[in-house]
Image 1 (cartoon, rainbow, N blue to C red):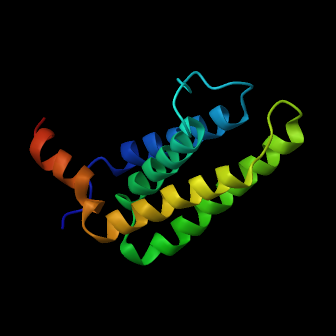
Image 2 (cartoon, rainbow, N blue to C red):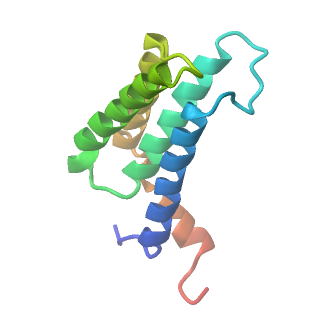
Length: 129
């Protein structure tokens, strides 16, 4: 498979996503609907699933273990910071949701969903665009 033509852009977007998740995790309240059961846990799972799957596009499978450990550590760190903030409370179930999202996307990436950015570049960003 050819390397990503816009790898730096995709990495920049990925780090922006990490910053966004961090800011949302530490902000006083989320600007998201929470009127369905387990909404908070769903958002945690979704956020970390997106992060893991995004970065799986940028790294070889041999680095996935490090990504998984890094995102799980990020989830734990943000929950600890929440509990220390006095504004929000850190929850073990949030760590579990973060970890589950990371692990689910790890599995998806191993099953072939680690080529989405390659496919996007090939189909939508043809050379010369």
